[in-house]
Image (tube, rainbow, N blue to C red; front, side, top):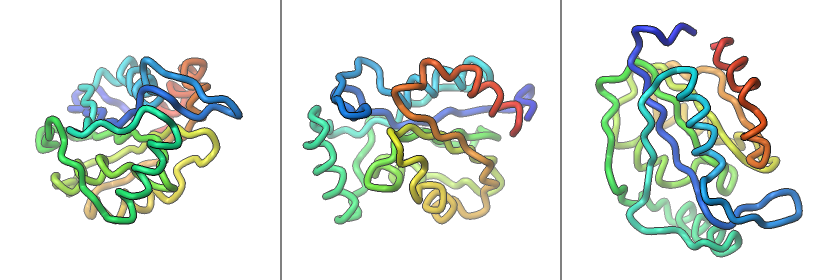
Length: 173
């Protein structure tokens, strides 16, 4: 896909702090999805937009999982620090870690507050083995009228080593 002349937004939700990695927990100063967003931005020149919930998630991995599970079960839509509108953009990348098999609830808040009719939407994802889960299907359901392109899911702990893979994927779009 040629990004020249297109207005590109790279919207992403990313979790810093304690994250799962193989059998060890690691504390991240920069979340894996944020790292991936920055690598996408290097190639596309798009605007970066971190989707940030006003309420912080617990730092501990298991405590965060419990909070995410409760939000999913309750269908909570967390209030965001800033709500970016997508009207001016042609292509919107949506990045997220897989939480409970789908999109984190702040992503749903962002998606439901915008109209993606006629937009190109490209998912990208980090996890340690879940891939997209059913997040792409949920993305399609929340963004009727959008053209959803093939996304890229990476293992979070390998993102920093994946710049060439990301560039190759971007060329296939």
